[in-house]
Length: 450
Ligand SMILES: NC(=O)c1ccc[n+]([C@@H]2O[C@H](COP(=O)([O-])OP(=O)(O)OC[C@H]3O[C@@H](n4cnc5c(N)ncnc54)[C@H](OP(=O)(O)O)[C@@H]3O)[C@@H](O)[C@H]2O)c1
Image (cartoon, rainbow, N blue to C red; front, side):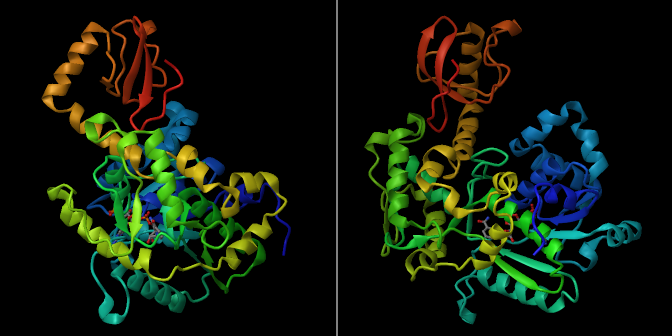
């Protein structure tokens, strides 16, 4: 095996053209962000987006990809040149992976893509679990169609080198581009968020089993390293499947999750407006026979019931520990190359679950997004908007007030002490003096600067 060097990743992606699908989704945009950061001198990124025409595709990329907080390091780095950098590197392709030639009608675009593209990162998928597929012995359509998809690409790949990455549940980023980025409140996050709000204290599951989950940036890091290692070893015709999980090397049990969730909610109580205070919330329990919570709000019960049925087999049946020996071979390939290990970490042993869930990654439970969404909803109700306008005019906030994510301090920019890095919304937890406050984030952590 050729020895890995620190600059191999940059070298490999230099001048490359990549097609990425599923980029409006959670995982693929983390990959795109990292590639643009690690090697801005890629030649081109074709980003396939479901859209009726290229203008709509560009709009979706702008709103759902490059406009996200995830790209803030890139935006800061490029400043006003970010748009021109993107126009030079990115081609928005309106298309649908279920259609012949992705449904693209523009023959010149098809020709260009066929000629240019050297790497395809296929991340588009229907990630709903809703429909049952047990007619065929599978627990849901997701697992069934994943298996079918793998069989089809394996049979049809011809001499195109193929790598399949199989992550378990993907969680918020561990560290890259910054800790705690996650998109939306997805299926199981709903349960965590309802617990933090004090609306639910149990869910279906066996506390003794190991659950598998992995931070999203570790999945994209492993994909990048797999691409580079495969290119170096010329394993062009070999199919390799990489399990990128934690269940073998850094297992966490449901009972540990229960403990960490309780500790989290005690230390970071949800705002009073949305539920009970943290201290009064009981420890969360996983119970294999759980069916429903009689105290759970009526209007959300059908969603909860659906989630219980989806997760019952995953959280109650004998645990699955995934052998990740192929991923370990990849880690061996970069062993000793310290900067690569640091920059492309996907070693499950190199993070501490409690630290990650408690401190490093406050978004893991979907809290920040959900809290901000709930806060925005309430702020935009007329009553609250008027209240905030009045407070804004007076230039004073009182204890407990929710401060909206637009700048404070009046017309004089010098007074806007929080203006430069203003990322609210915050809650005032102490009034220190005229115009000086101690603030905390919506999800509980105190803001260091007052
Ligand atoms: N998230 C997880 O916990 C997890 C765990 C294990 C494996 N995975 C796998 O990782 C991959 C990415 O997951 P994700 O979490 O990023 O999913 P996601 O957030 O649900 O995104 C799915 C993406 O696929 C696109 N898409 C769906 N159908 C399409 C079609 N017919 N043509 C073109 N684009 C289409 C969606 O576009 P629209 O925006 O137009 O809908 C979206 O961009 C998937 O293969 C998923 O199964 C995810």
